[in-house]
Length: 564
Image (tube, rainbow, N blue to C red; front, side, top):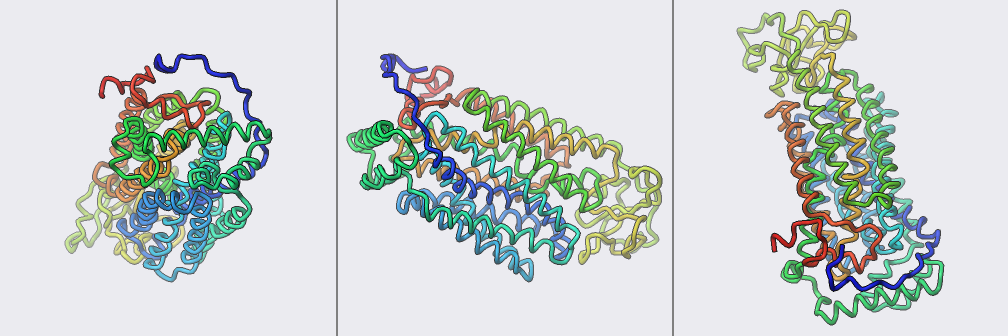
């Protein structure tokens, strides 16, 4: 809805004819999303092998996951001025080079310290690409297909996660060097993206902003088929730039200028909140630790856990396709709200599964003969779920009949050099079959609930809260603030990605598995309330008009006017 000053009838303009080249451009751009997704997915399976190969404790596991996210956050913020200075195309090309180098370092890593360095380098590339690619696609896309094309970037993210899960599964049996292939293969798509971008144009909006009008027209000619549409689009962008000049909004973008403009301030608030709630609703705990979560639910076989994680990644990919199809039909706002509502329900289901597993946790049925010499504190626990509360302990048991039927069970200290073995007792030597040593799961008949809960979670998350924060952020800022606005929102995403991924294992230890997912459900519910109150619909509007939605009195479906 528009305010009264916008009620004059608009001139009817026929829809732009979209050149097929824009789909080629979107494909090569979205490889950045594929790399983002591949890294998210591959670390899930690789960590199963790496934690045994390098005897990684919880802290090292969290560091190896989170350092990529931390550097991505830092360089997402830095991406704003870099995009303003160099342009979208050069930043994406630089990101692909950095990602290639990081992948090679990871493939050649000789220790956990080198792994940490490689993950940091990869984070630089991911951070730059994550804030630049959606913005670039939005700026070169006609308004009638913009939401769909930006959502394709998210489709590539989930596609990357699925491919990574399949790669993990394929190399999971090679415990010596399989992880090198898992982490190093990302150099191939990164190189393809770099080569492709040699032949792609710069954003016409950035070129006009930099007074390179001939190049801007040439860029538009590759994107739009009809000559009259090209001229009209060029004049529209140029007029918007002139209006910004008249209003004194060109030149150096500072924090004061960003937050003194009421529409930009509101847009940044909504954009950053979308990215915040995407992360604190738990998506990257599910993606980074999917194989680990499946193991936590009672699946003890590494390869099976990795392939079951691939199933969840495939669900994520399929339902992202649903989102690409729906975004221009039902709009951004409704899709986001339905997505968040489903996320709350599925997280509650996931929490219930872990609660039932804990409630029916198998007991400790015997004590070790070494109990008098115990300094680990493991022998005090009376059940498997109690034993799992300490990262220094594991549950040693013999199975009979069904996997959840146990006997001769005791809680023993974990061997710090090999977490698959206990330090003493029946599980201190490697052998096939019983007894089994569980260092991060309990035998349970409720394992199916964790897998079902994750599938349900991704089925709701993928069409809405997956792509919409990136799609909406690519649309809601005026040209002069677009780089800075996207940098702020992408940076917010990565900062809270760091917080969630760095704390997940410790949160599950402190709150239990069911408590952790209940916490994420609460955050998702808060996100639903915020989106319901403050997110306007941006479907089908030219970029130059979207900012009007955040002006006072424009969008009747939000509470802006009651707060300002």
